[in-house]
Length: 301
Image (cartoon, rainbow, N blue to C red; front, side, top):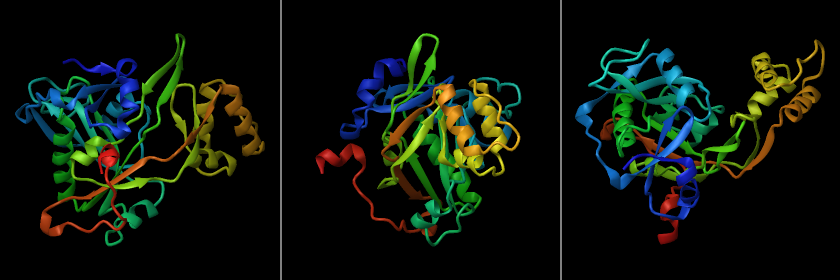
């Protein structure tokens, strides 16, 4: 069975919160696709998992993930198809078809609340990106997670926190509004032995015309003239906002810029939160918060 584009699978995926975990997610040129987990067909002998330098990992994620962005990453691992030649700048050993990136969340408390016995950013990290091309057969993401976590454990990682975003993401194109990611509830994490911890706090997000999100942290950089505000301002200017004048207060300029570029506001109810310890069983650590039934099981509990 071929991958299903979001336009075909989106409606069904949006109802997965109370359904069987039938779909696994794939990516291509920042558009989500979906495969049924029952499709199978993944042969681990055809692939290898290797540590990746930031360059190839960043290029792959920015090209294919719907966000088009590269977060603060501590380490990345690549999934290579052994039978094909690597692309320009990619490591030897096969063509890059997937990336797992482990990184640093915006708040240290995200990690210390879940893994209080671990040193945040060194022993505990966030699963920042998991991106597989739509050609990878079903169940490939489980293999990449397992292989990547094993390599991360050799570097001292003992705990991973992961999020899944149930809200759809769209972008404006010349042909109208396009769904690029219809939302998902994280069945891949439940299948990987992650504990489900509920939802993160609700928040309000600014969504730019290309479907990318202007986070509260990025907006705050402009309002307070903090380090990094020039990059945020350039990003808004690319969508048509006027340049900010020297000495002009950031708050009013940001409000005007968001209106000028046609940004929308999303009342986000919070992401689904998952966590698991990694490494040899004798070194596994406890997860502090109370665990709950995963979203796909709640109607049957």
